Length: 404
Image 1 (cartoon, rainbow, N blue to C red):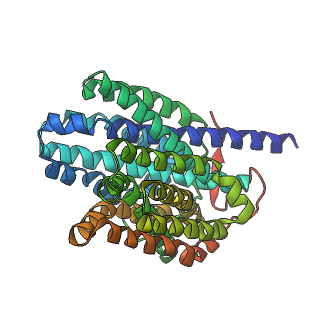
Image 2: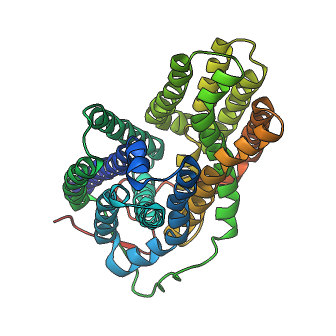
Image 3: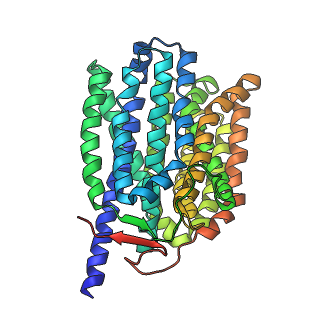
């Protein structure tokens, strides 16, 4: 009994440690996003050139994410996450140092690559803890990522308001976040492969199950990217609102997603992943329809709010399902992450292209169609349902060293 109590206590500590890692990871993103105008001015790039450069984080992440599984296999999950997270937090300083377009693209490629690898490693550990606790935690972990992004954005907003040099701001933020990340990683699970387990390939196509799960994530991330980048423009150009109200819509959408993710685990435990995503798809579709048909700004803002509610927990559940869909969780998670990163990369530009050719209203008809896909294809998450093993019991072919 004492051993079981100790295992449960260690598992809870590991959960809090991974939660801190998610928050730290989000803080880097928030810290960077708020200083993009300063970085653009420092590198002397045009808006079009900046748009090109901002594609490189997603490209770097997509290229590097398949390597995360091999790094974890070689060094163990704890050491791998500690190293990859430190590389990510330190990479925050690179974009602000870039003096021109070429160096900015290179810096953002490295920034994205380290982000993607750390993302895969922390999600794999989150899935393992969720399996052992036998209750949903992935939604809450992604909610804490959103909280971290908001905190990083707040710090960046203050720094920008004070006119602080982004190089100094990001150096200080990177130092603080690196120390916090290395400290948090002391208590995460140290998963190690079984002796007979072959190391994963450096690059490999994700399994078919991950492709199907990734397609669901693609729909959710497309709707998220479209809403984040175009909701303010939609209210301003289609419904002729003020700039302040348009910006408030984007902020409200972000906060809605963060809050729903923080409370989403209880819903998932009550209804299961498939039913939760199916209901979320219906809610998101209704929200998108309200946006398309909105006669006044208030209706459109309500529509964007429903969109946020409907898609908030989908990506966390896709990662959780991928981690349980085959013998190599990191490879499956990397596959799903690559698909969702790609969706986030193409969504803003595709919405803009459709709007240029037709209108923003037609663009959000595309969002409506993809949101309905969540309800239709939610059943592919059924294979990722948790199997009850008992708190603290490791998954097959895994070993855990005690925390230092």
